[in-house]
Length: 606
Image 1 (cartoon, rainbow, N blue to C red):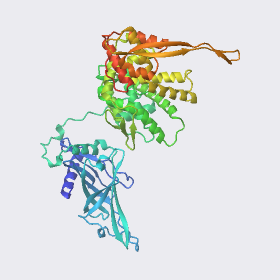
Image 2 (cartoon, rainbow, N blue to C red):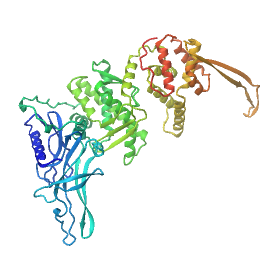
Image 3 (cartoon, one colour):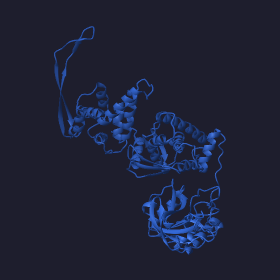
Image 4 (cartoon, rainbow, N blue to C red):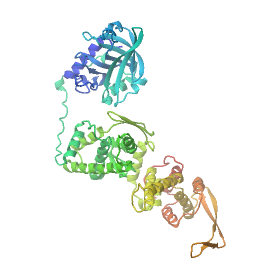
């Protein structure tokens, strides 16, 4: 545990970092930690690093009972994954029932004794290290715990590390509980405490315990780049203030929507892509079929690709949770969503104006790119998982996405879409575009095509999509489409493939379908008066055996003239030997069975 000598050493290193007198010892921020009579919320911890390795974090006390210069809170990595803590707490001893005055603290608690420390609801043994001289109600306690333990693993940047002691004492025949409290604000967790814990969990030793290399004269160290100056007078006043805030990395107003950093981030990348991207020599990856309603394809800087995909995937479910948490909502969620879509378009126009003034490259453009990324909340996620933690300064949201995040697959699909140049095989009809998307391996685009068709079919006259009938039709069609997995188009393809190309070396089977036709007759009043004699017809269709599950689910081997014509037009441009045919058919089976694409590849030739 931390003893007095070690605490004094940390105080000295904190002074060196604050003075900037030794480049081997640096702090994560300017040390302004203090408490005043008017400010009772503690400032974030300062991380001290020695020769680049995290050594400890601390806050200092001042004017709030804690003597100036004393480390009010300190956390260091001892080594081997163990964290040592030191905390100064304000003690509250029992009151004398006769005099109404606080009893002497020394009657109940003494240095060297063990007590229970409660951190985030968990109890840990601590030792009473010392009573602060001349401050009768201040005591320092020390504790040690695993950096990978439940308490330290649960810390987040939107919470405070609250801790207190609970000690039963005997006062006039009854048990009382004395509570001693402390608190550390973790608003900058990722930049200080989080880095220290990550360093500690890796089993690293504390750099305080190692020999430091030779000191470097502070004047010989390279000077940091001067702050960038950007003139934004050409923007409206309200937008000028917002973009200046982003550029400087200042926190958002408490009244600002939690959606706002997403809108700025999306608008920047979309504006850059539309204005500069196609002709830019910047290294880019492509995101095709984004979850954003107004965006199908966007090119993104390679370094920002993961952030964009995660943010775009999280935005809609996050927006819903934010809406549900808001105190009052005067509009429906769909109306609010439309308004934010419109706001993002306005933000994009502002970025167009910035690009027009400062160009597509250079220090200013790159500074803005990093700034909008840094303005986003923190994302915690794993590739292949649906769970995403979105962490703001003061709150967090746990999301379960509709589809798992698959970043590398998204990159591959984007590259395949960009490289698909032989679109002469497919036309713009719905069946043809479904087949094209399946062939490339862009199954998400099939879902987008389905959604567009459902929207048009359920609301054919472009009226209010929120009316009861449109909602009912949309829901019913979505369920029906999801169950069928495009089985009608795949079945039509399987039959057309046999008619036009033949077996192509595949095993086949034959389906038989019996149909009965008759005509009902009515009189002038619409009343039924009789029927014609029934006509019987038997249809046969030979299909490749691998499509058997699809055709069985469709329960029909007949298709409309339109569907047969459109699918036949695609098949007629393929051949038994073509790579594209095999790619398309393998992906059809994978799509129908709900699997990942068997192939992700461009349509480059037949």
